[in-house]
Image 1 (cartoon, rainbow, N blue to C red):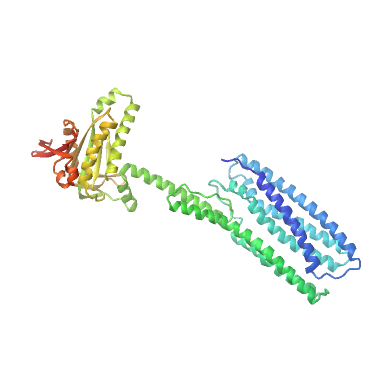
Image 2: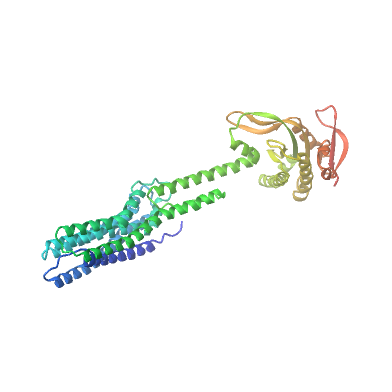
Length: 495
């Protein structure tokens, strides 16, 4: 886990809150100076100076207290994240409520400011005091909403640490709530401001047509700027995680099942992020099982099994079978350490698997020191006779060159056999049973007596292409154990 750098979001949010509150103060001044039709006071200059001093004190105290309170809230949460507390820790919810805590503190500060300025101006005029208090409260409401959006973005790394793992996500925030907040900032504040100006005018404020026009332009300009910024922040809050999900889905589509997305949104989008990670984990597990399954039964059998239900039973198919068996394996096991024997067998079978795969066959089973390879089941293999002959010839050459410590016989036969799932409902195995399998095993025993240690049924040469058939020579027919008639056989010419 990378080191958690908590100072960056805290500094960014602290600076952001200072800027937001200063902009809110300037906005209050613009509204009172140009938009709100306030009545003239007898000592207007003194009142303005009093409000200016009060604004400076309120902003300074409010911002200072807000930043101190913010760090007081976040400091223990940093310790919670760094010590890796369990996800049922109560502080986890405090982390996720961080934006709401910041917004609540901002809202209380602006409410205090509204009451303060209303009280400061009430002695001069109750109407002026009420107008100013409503204006400050209105701007404070919007500033609080902006603070929430800014905190939600700045504290994303905190939320990511609180939401990582398998802990359930709380249902405390929603995309609907975020969009309603955006509507208030982009539209609601302007509409409410317009309604209040109309109310002030109707209730007796001295307002000219030019003054009302200026008021509408000020409110409209504020709505354009504030609405654009609020909509951008809300859109980014939803678009960023969705963009991450889109990129992760693209990685999954291209076979990268290690894709995942960080969870840092406590709304429905966060549930979507968590759901995607669980889905990706399931796909990774399924792919791992598929690869493991394919290693055990072969890719064609695995693909066939994954495509539908595996049923017991078989079908008659024309197959070509290669059987390879180590000569003197018992002696080897007695003379070497078990670890050495296993390493040697793995080298041996690595060559077998590589050659068979390269020539379109698949390993049906490993039986101790022997292996059985099939062409023609479960899927048809074009030119299976040619491929099996070439595989047998190349296998003999590579085993002698790459695993000289071992000697092995290779036998190849062809014919009709039963291929299918054999066993019980609880456990079955796809295999091939029939005369070609038995004959390949018998030819493997006889191959140990020929120089190339490779012996194939001679009929295969007629089915192979001429180039491959020319690499083989016919031998005198041999008596295969368990058969009355002689069997035609062939061996590679290279030996």
